[in-house]
Length: 339
Image 1 (cartoon, one colour):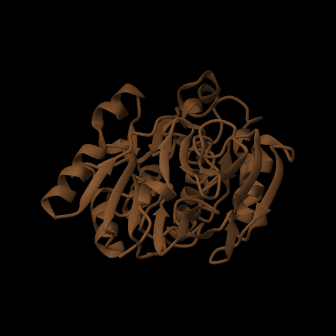
Image 2: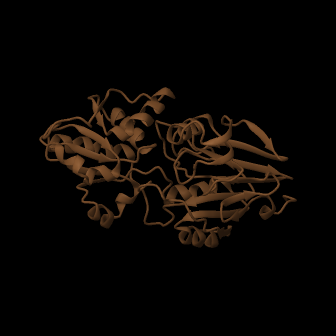
Image 3: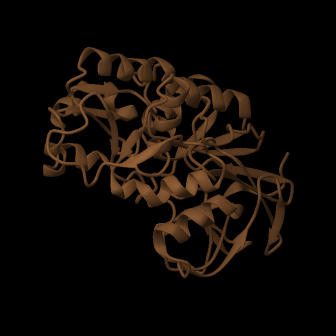
Protein backbone atom coordinates (compact mmCIF):
# COMPACT_ATOMS: atom_id res chain seq x y z
CA UNK A 1 0.00 0.00 0.00
CA UNK A 2 1.22 3.50 -0.78
CA UNK A 3 2.05 5.42 2.39
CA UNK A 4 1.33 8.86 0.96
CA UNK A 5 -2.20 10.03 0.23
CA UNK A 6 -2.64 10.95 -3.46
CA UNK A 7 -4.00 14.43 -2.67
CA UNK A 8 -0.74 15.23 -0.87
CA UNK A 9 1.26 14.53 -4.04
CA UNK A 10 -1.05 15.97 -6.72
CA UNK A 11 -4.17 18.06 -6.29
CA UNK A 12 -6.34 20.24 -8.56
CA UNK A 13 -5.89 24.01 -8.26
CA UNK A 14 -7.34 26.84 -10.37
CA UNK A 15 -4.10 26.92 -12.40
CA UNK A 16 -4.10 23.15 -12.97
CA UNK A 17 -2.78 19.98 -11.34
CA UNK A 18 -0.33 20.98 -8.61
CA UNK A 19 2.43 18.99 -6.94
CA UNK A 20 3.06 20.61 -3.55
CA UNK A 21 6.17 18.57 -2.56
CA UNK A 22 7.88 19.46 -5.85
CA UNK A 23 6.23 22.88 -6.18
CA UNK A 24 5.31 22.44 -9.86
CA UNK A 25 2.19 22.27 -12.01
CA UNK A 26 1.38 19.85 -14.82
CA UNK A 27 -0.07 21.57 -17.92
CA UNK A 28 -1.05 24.73 -16.05
CA UNK A 29 -3.65 26.93 -17.72
CA UNK A 30 -1.87 30.14 -16.76
CA UNK A 31 1.76 31.15 -16.19
CA UNK A 32 3.39 29.57 -13.13
CA UNK A 33 6.90 29.37 -11.71
CA UNK A 34 7.49 25.68 -12.57
CA UNK A 35 5.60 23.66 -15.19
CA UNK A 36 5.75 20.12 -16.56
CA UNK A 37 4.21 20.15 -20.05
CA UNK A 38 2.81 16.93 -21.55
CA UNK A 39 2.54 18.11 -25.18
CA UNK A 40 2.56 21.12 -27.46
CA UNK A 41 -1.16 21.85 -28.04
CA UNK A 42 -1.97 25.36 -26.83
CA UNK A 43 -4.56 24.25 -24.27
CA UNK A 44 -1.77 22.36 -22.45
CA UNK A 45 1.37 24.30 -23.41
CA UNK A 46 1.27 28.03 -22.72
CA UNK A 47 3.94 30.70 -22.79
CA UNK A 48 5.09 32.74 -19.81
CA UNK A 49 6.18 30.09 -17.28
CA UNK A 50 9.31 30.50 -15.18
CA UNK A 51 10.75 27.03 -15.82
CA UNK A 52 9.41 24.35 -18.19
CA UNK A 53 10.21 20.63 -18.19
CA UNK A 54 9.13 18.66 -21.27
CA UNK A 55 10.35 16.32 -24.01
CA UNK A 56 12.77 17.79 -26.56
CA UNK A 57 10.08 17.64 -29.24
CA UNK A 58 7.52 19.49 -27.10
CA UNK A 59 10.08 22.17 -26.27
CA UNK A 60 10.83 22.53 -29.99
CA UNK A 61 7.10 22.92 -30.72
CA UNK A 62 6.72 25.54 -27.98
CA UNK A 63 9.72 27.45 -29.30
CA UNK A 64 8.26 27.34 -32.82
CA UNK A 65 4.86 28.58 -31.70
CA UNK A 66 5.81 31.06 -28.96
CA UNK A 67 9.45 31.96 -29.63
CA UNK A 68 12.66 30.82 -27.93
CA UNK A 69 11.93 33.00 -24.90
CA UNK A 70 8.56 31.38 -24.10
CA UNK A 71 9.90 30.56 -20.60
CA UNK A 72 12.78 31.87 -18.48
CA UNK A 73 14.38 28.41 -18.55
CA UNK A 74 13.68 24.98 -20.05
CA UNK A 75 14.74 21.44 -19.21
CA UNK A 76 14.66 18.74 -21.87
CA UNK A 77 13.82 15.23 -20.63
CA UNK A 78 13.78 12.25 -23.00
CA UNK A 79 11.31 9.39 -22.77
CA UNK A 80 12.09 7.14 -19.80
CA UNK A 81 14.63 9.50 -18.26
CA UNK A 82 14.05 10.06 -14.52
CA UNK A 83 14.65 13.45 -12.90
CA UNK A 84 14.03 14.78 -9.38
CA UNK A 85 12.27 18.04 -8.61
CA UNK A 86 12.02 18.91 -4.93
CA UNK A 87 12.38 15.27 -3.93
CA UNK A 88 9.69 14.15 -6.37
CA UNK A 89 10.68 11.72 -9.12
CA UNK A 90 9.36 12.55 -12.61
CA UNK A 91 9.51 10.41 -15.75
CA UNK A 92 7.98 11.18 -19.13
CA UNK A 93 6.69 8.22 -21.16
CA UNK A 94 5.00 8.21 -24.58
CA UNK A 95 1.31 9.17 -24.81
CA UNK A 96 0.76 8.51 -28.54
CA UNK A 97 -1.09 11.81 -29.01
CA UNK A 98 1.23 13.95 -31.18
CA UNK A 99 4.98 14.38 -31.71
CA UNK A 100 6.68 14.65 -28.31
CA UNK A 101 3.52 13.94 -26.30
CA UNK A 102 4.11 12.34 -22.92
CA UNK A 103 2.47 11.04 -19.81
CA UNK A 104 3.96 12.41 -16.59
CA UNK A 105 4.86 9.67 -14.09
CA UNK A 106 5.11 11.32 -10.66
CA UNK A 107 6.45 9.34 -7.67
CA UNK A 108 7.20 9.97 -4.02
CA UNK A 109 7.00 7.98 -0.79
CA UNK A 110 5.96 4.73 -2.46
CA UNK A 111 3.11 6.40 -4.38
CA UNK A 112 3.03 6.49 -8.18
CA UNK A 113 0.61 8.74 -10.05
CA UNK A 114 0.43 8.91 -13.84
CA UNK A 115 -0.96 11.99 -15.59
CA UNK A 116 -1.92 10.93 -19.11
CA UNK A 117 -2.23 14.33 -20.75
CA UNK A 118 -4.06 13.74 -24.04
CA UNK A 119 -3.53 10.29 -25.55
CA UNK A 120 -4.73 7.58 -27.89
CA UNK A 121 -3.97 3.86 -28.15
CA UNK A 122 -4.08 3.26 -31.89
CA UNK A 123 -1.01 3.40 -34.08
CA UNK A 124 0.18 6.81 -35.26
CA UNK A 125 2.99 6.95 -37.87
CA UNK A 126 4.14 10.35 -36.54
CA UNK A 127 4.86 9.54 -32.88
CA UNK A 128 5.71 6.66 -30.50
CA UNK A 129 2.77 4.61 -29.15
CA UNK A 130 1.20 5.02 -25.71
CA UNK A 131 3.17 3.23 -23.01
CA UNK A 132 1.17 1.46 -20.31
CA UNK A 133 2.54 2.34 -16.85
CA UNK A 134 0.89 0.59 -13.87
CA UNK A 135 0.25 3.02 -11.03
CA UNK A 136 -1.67 3.78 -7.86
CA UNK A 137 -3.60 6.67 -9.42
CA UNK A 138 -4.20 7.14 -13.15
CA UNK A 139 -5.24 10.67 -14.15
CA UNK A 140 -6.90 10.52 -17.54
CA UNK A 141 -8.60 12.75 -20.07
CA UNK A 142 -12.09 11.80 -21.28
CA UNK A 143 -12.60 13.88 -24.43
CA UNK A 144 -14.56 11.01 -26.00
CA UNK A 145 -15.67 9.46 -22.71
CA UNK A 146 -19.07 8.13 -23.81
CA UNK A 147 -19.86 4.70 -25.34
CA UNK A 148 -21.25 6.39 -28.48
CA UNK A 149 -17.71 7.40 -29.46
CA UNK A 150 -16.08 4.45 -31.21
CA UNK A 151 -13.68 5.60 -33.90
CA UNK A 152 -13.36 3.58 -37.12
CA UNK A 153 -10.09 2.36 -38.60
CA UNK A 154 -7.87 5.24 -39.78
CA UNK A 155 -6.86 3.47 -42.99
CA UNK A 156 -10.50 3.01 -43.92
CA UNK A 157 -11.21 6.71 -43.45
CA UNK A 158 -8.21 7.69 -45.60
CA UNK A 159 -9.36 5.20 -48.25
CA UNK A 160 -12.69 7.07 -48.36
CA UNK A 161 -10.83 10.31 -49.06
CA UNK A 162 -8.74 8.80 -51.85
CA UNK A 163 -11.82 7.13 -53.33
CA UNK A 164 -13.62 10.49 -53.34
CA UNK A 165 -10.82 12.09 -55.39
CA UNK A 166 -11.42 9.39 -58.01
CA UNK A 167 -15.19 9.87 -57.94
CA UNK A 168 -14.89 13.66 -58.22
CA UNK A 169 -11.67 14.32 -60.19
CA UNK A 170 -12.92 17.78 -61.18
CA UNK A 171 -13.06 18.96 -57.54
CA UNK A 172 -10.34 20.06 -55.12
CA UNK A 173 -10.54 18.17 -51.82
CA UNK A 174 -9.96 20.61 -48.96
CA UNK A 175 -9.14 18.68 -45.77
CA UNK A 176 -9.56 20.58 -42.50
CA UNK A 177 -7.01 19.27 -40.00
CA UNK A 178 -5.53 20.84 -36.89
CA UNK A 179 -2.05 22.24 -37.66
CA UNK A 180 -0.18 20.35 -34.91
CA UNK A 181 -0.41 16.58 -35.10
CA UNK A 182 -3.55 15.93 -37.09
CA UNK A 183 -2.30 17.51 -40.32
CA UNK A 184 0.96 15.57 -40.30
CA UNK A 185 -0.79 12.35 -39.37
CA UNK A 186 -3.29 12.71 -42.23
CA UNK A 187 -0.40 13.34 -44.63
CA UNK A 188 1.45 10.23 -43.43
CA UNK A 189 -1.73 8.14 -43.61
CA UNK A 190 -2.28 9.35 -47.18
CA UNK A 191 1.26 8.22 -48.05
CA UNK A 192 0.62 4.82 -46.49
CA UNK A 193 -2.66 4.64 -48.41
CA UNK A 194 -0.79 5.00 -51.71
CA UNK A 195 -1.16 8.74 -52.38
CA UNK A 196 2.33 9.57 -53.67
CA UNK A 197 1.39 12.77 -55.50
CA UNK A 198 2.21 16.23 -54.19
CA UNK A 199 0.00 17.23 -51.26
CA UNK A 200 -0.81 20.93 -51.09
CA UNK A 201 -0.81 22.72 -47.75
CA UNK A 202 -2.08 26.01 -46.35
CA UNK A 203 0.69 28.40 -45.37
CA UNK A 204 -0.25 28.09 -41.69
CA UNK A 205 0.99 24.48 -41.81
CA UNK A 206 4.49 25.17 -43.14
CA UNK A 207 6.49 25.67 -39.94
CA UNK A 208 5.08 22.68 -38.10
CA UNK A 209 5.43 20.47 -41.18
CA UNK A 210 9.12 21.41 -41.33
CA UNK A 211 9.49 20.72 -37.61
CA UNK A 212 8.00 17.23 -38.02
CA UNK A 213 10.31 16.55 -40.96
CA UNK A 214 13.30 17.80 -38.93
CA UNK A 215 12.35 15.20 -36.31
CA UNK A 216 12.37 12.36 -38.83
CA UNK A 217 8.74 12.24 -39.98
CA UNK A 218 8.80 11.90 -43.78
CA UNK A 219 5.83 13.76 -45.24
CA UNK A 220 6.78 13.30 -48.90
CA UNK A 221 6.40 16.02 -51.57
CA UNK A 222 4.50 19.07 -50.31
CA UNK A 223 3.68 22.36 -52.04
CA UNK A 224 2.07 25.62 -51.00
CA UNK A 225 -1.61 26.12 -51.81
CA UNK A 226 -1.48 29.77 -50.83
CA UNK A 227 -0.58 31.36 -54.17
CA UNK A 228 -2.66 29.16 -56.46
CA UNK A 229 -4.83 30.88 -59.07
CA UNK A 230 -8.62 30.58 -59.34
CA UNK A 231 -10.25 27.23 -60.22
CA UNK A 232 -6.94 25.41 -59.85
CA UNK A 233 -5.91 22.01 -58.43
CA UNK A 234 -8.84 19.82 -59.57
CA UNK A 235 -8.44 16.27 -58.24
CA UNK A 236 -5.79 17.33 -55.73
CA UNK A 237 -5.76 17.23 -51.92
CA UNK A 238 -5.11 20.32 -49.81
CA UNK A 239 -4.55 20.22 -46.04
CA UNK A 240 -5.65 23.38 -44.24
CA UNK A 241 -6.73 24.59 -40.79
CA UNK A 242 -10.40 23.75 -40.13
CA UNK A 243 -11.41 27.42 -40.21
CA UNK A 244 -9.90 27.85 -43.70
CA UNK A 245 -12.07 25.29 -45.50
CA UNK A 246 -15.15 27.52 -45.10
CA UNK A 247 -13.24 30.78 -45.64
CA UNK A 248 -13.05 32.97 -48.76
CA UNK A 249 -9.57 31.52 -49.24
CA UNK A 250 -11.14 28.18 -50.18
CA UNK A 251 -13.19 29.61 -53.05
CA UNK A 252 -10.16 29.97 -55.33
CA UNK A 253 -9.96 26.21 -55.91
CA UNK A 254 -11.82 24.03 -58.40
CA UNK A 255 -15.33 23.41 -57.01
CA UNK A 256 -13.89 22.76 -53.51
CA UNK A 257 -15.16 19.71 -51.64
CA UNK A 258 -14.99 20.35 -47.86
CA UNK A 259 -13.49 17.51 -45.81
CA UNK A 260 -12.85 17.54 -42.06
CA UNK A 261 -10.68 15.07 -40.12
CA UNK A 262 -11.75 14.92 -36.47
CA UNK A 263 -13.17 12.52 -33.93
CA UNK A 264 -16.12 14.91 -33.68
CA UNK A 265 -17.12 14.04 -37.24
CA UNK A 266 -18.93 11.02 -35.84
CA UNK A 267 -21.51 13.59 -34.68
CA UNK A 268 -23.46 14.30 -37.87
CA UNK A 269 -24.81 17.61 -36.60
CA UNK A 270 -21.25 18.95 -36.27
CA UNK A 271 -20.47 17.99 -39.85
CA UNK A 272 -23.66 19.66 -41.09
CA UNK A 273 -22.99 22.83 -39.10
CA UNK A 274 -19.61 23.17 -40.81
CA UNK A 275 -20.90 22.34 -44.28
CA UNK A 276 -18.63 19.30 -44.46
CA UNK A 277 -19.39 16.99 -47.38
CA UNK A 278 -16.89 14.28 -46.44
CA UNK A 279 -16.48 13.85 -42.67
CA UNK A 280 -13.45 11.72 -41.72
CA UNK A 281 -13.52 10.27 -38.21
CA UNK A 282 -9.79 10.48 -37.45
CA UNK A 283 -8.98 11.41 -33.86
CA UNK A 284 -5.84 12.09 -31.84
CA UNK A 285 -7.73 11.18 -28.66
CA UNK A 286 -8.70 7.82 -27.20
CA UNK A 287 -12.24 6.73 -28.01
CA UNK A 288 -14.49 4.99 -25.50
CA UNK A 289 -13.02 1.52 -26.04
CA UNK A 290 -9.47 2.85 -25.79
CA UNK A 291 -10.25 4.73 -22.58
CA UNK A 292 -11.72 1.74 -20.76
CA UNK A 293 -9.04 -0.62 -22.11
CA UNK A 294 -6.38 1.74 -20.83
CA UNK A 295 -7.89 1.74 -17.34
CA UNK A 296 -7.93 -2.06 -17.43
CA UNK A 297 -4.32 -2.18 -18.63
CA UNK A 298 -3.01 0.34 -16.10
CA UNK A 299 -5.09 -1.23 -13.29
CA UNK A 300 -4.91 1.79 -10.95
CA UNK A 301 -6.16 1.87 -7.37
CA UNK A 302 -7.90 5.14 -8.21
CA UNK A 303 -8.99 6.84 -11.44
CA UNK A 304 -9.07 10.63 -11.68
CA UNK A 305 -10.61 12.30 -14.74
CA UNK A 306 -9.31 15.73 -15.73
CA UNK A 307 -11.71 16.94 -18.42
CA UNK A 308 -14.11 15.81 -21.14
CA UNK A 309 -17.22 13.62 -20.92
CA UNK A 310 -16.35 12.34 -17.45
CA UNK A 311 -19.83 11.13 -16.49
CA UNK A 312 -19.64 8.09 -18.76
CA UNK A 313 -16.23 7.02 -17.46
CA UNK A 314 -17.31 7.63 -13.86
CA UNK A 315 -20.32 5.35 -14.35
CA UNK A 316 -18.15 2.66 -15.99
CA UNK A 317 -15.69 2.84 -13.07
CA UNK A 318 -18.52 2.48 -10.55
CA UNK A 319 -19.89 -0.59 -12.34
CA UNK A 320 -16.40 -2.17 -12.47
CA UNK A 321 -15.39 -1.47 -8.89
CA UNK A 322 -12.82 1.22 -9.66
CA UNK A 323 -12.67 4.16 -7.26
CA UNK A 324 -13.00 7.30 -9.41
CA UNK A 325 -13.47 11.04 -9.20
CA UNK A 326 -13.89 13.89 -11.67
CA UNK A 327 -11.49 16.81 -11.24
CA UNK A 328 -13.43 19.07 -13.64
CA UNK A 329 -10.32 21.01 -14.62
CA UNK A 330 -11.11 24.02 -16.79
CA UNK A 331 -9.15 25.54 -19.66
CA UNK A 332 -8.67 22.44 -21.80
CA UNK A 333 -10.24 21.46 -25.15
CA UNK A 334 -9.88 25.08 -26.25
CA UNK A 335 -7.94 24.34 -29.45
CA UNK A 336 -9.74 24.66 -32.78
CA UNK A 337 -11.72 21.40 -32.89
CA UNK A 338 -8.75 19.46 -31.53
CA UNK A 339 -10.36 16.03 -31.78
